[in-house]
Length: 266
Image 1: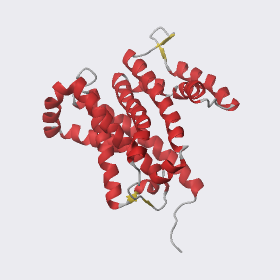
Image 2: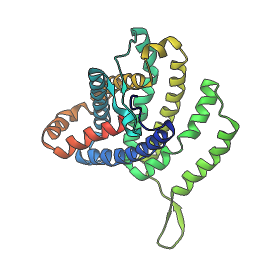
Image 3: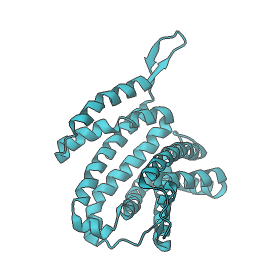
Image 4: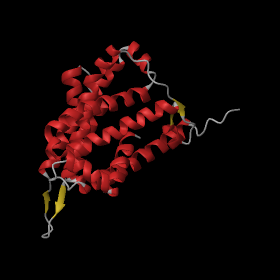
């Protein structure tokens, strides 16, 4: 009998553990990559965000080349076969809104975490609230009663986490404007991304030609990278020679840029 690995219930728990650990490591590598280019005032945040998606694109092409997706190894299960999707030009055009929202959510998140990693994550945790509003207003998909009941808890938790104890013992709201603004932009993009994802996969033909969520995610990252490239050149193109020179010589930037991209993808 072929080895199938851990039961799905165990794998699910392990996936959650590795997702949480990967998220923490992404924050660490992302912060280190931004610091390597000069921090949030360097003017290279969009470049770092775009190059992270570039790493994702390279990883996706490597998976298609070897025809294996190793993600299930994290759940102690056998890796899955992943062939190149049979998507058509029409399918790719239909995928652009999803990729645009995914790219926007990623770039805005990098800006938010560059402002203040801790507060940026606190703001990001309010994403389900915006997802509920966007789903109801724009996609006619209102959340269930139980999900609505959870929203006040999320809002209260975000507000509580934002409080900081002062030297006099009193609590006050602590926030970073960059993390707040870009965190909310990221939440909005992520909310629309969820709606566009459901809309895209509702087309059974598109879903079948993608051949699984692994391929859909890979294509989304590749198209997202292509979308961010012109924005990067338009906003930070004048600083690109400086970035390239630093990338050639700074091993810390090289390592943390690649690892942040891999952690984001995986």
